[in-house]
Length: 170
Image 1 (cartoon, rainbow, N blue to C red):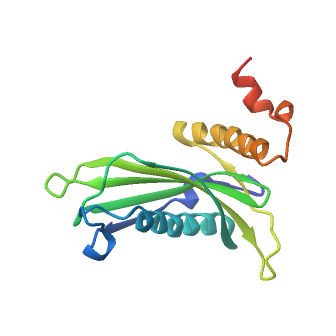
Image 2: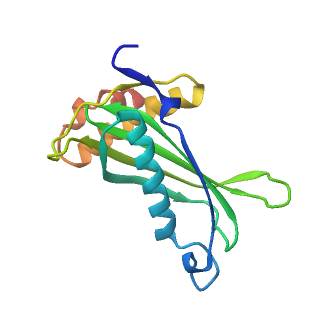
């Protein structure tokens, strides 16, 4: 295993109840409140993986599939999908629990990127991820494609250097 850790070691789960001060005039959870919850749980997940101070670098993707109503029970699950040197991609899955049956349905998903830093703010290396389940392996592979796309869009690499992305079109 060396300087690697299993993805499951970063799993972080929290449950919230949507309160009146977190809703809009339609009685739905504010998107900004949900983003804050996701940022917080993703930071804990990244910290568990790296055992370092972590800072949010980007919110790469957020999907709002289903609105979340006042009083609903919301579960957020975060796990590091892949690590790149000092950065970590964290995927957050959000579900709503039916209060009568206990059945959960997906409501949102987000992908955040964090960087581990020391006390002076300099980046520090983090362990690699070892994916085990099919979902972890799929997310691990997709993380590299997302990273390459982000680097292309940021002008940090040329499209010809994005080997994982190129392979999709060959």
